[in-house]
Image 1 (cartoon, rainbow, N blue to C red):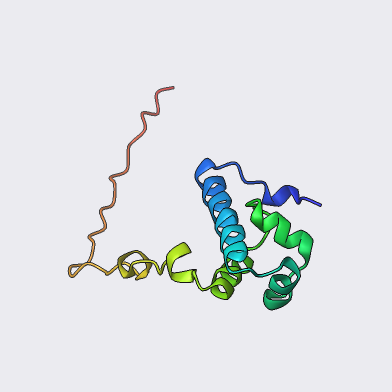
Image 2: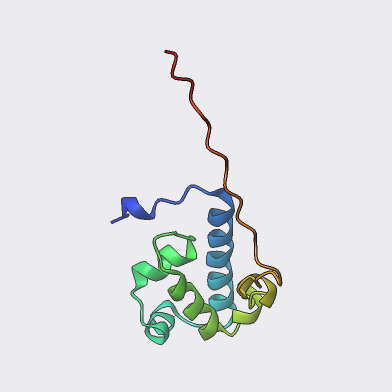
Length: 110
């Protein structure tokens, strides 16, 4: 049953999930792994596998990644992120200067 909280509408996300699903299906068939064997290998049910192969956003990311590991395509299908986007931002060498705004005086003639 689809969960309303998992509704994904971003087209880039849906395209990526669809390509991941096609990859899983193509690699599984190419390696001649049956659905039952593959499901047992990664610990999922057949309906979950079918949803994955369709690119469903209701399947967790770790399940997709486990499938890639089992198929031996993790480094191609989901490569490691570059370090420059996962490292914390380096603080400036000089501290930022806080500037306080001057108080506006209100005219009391109203």
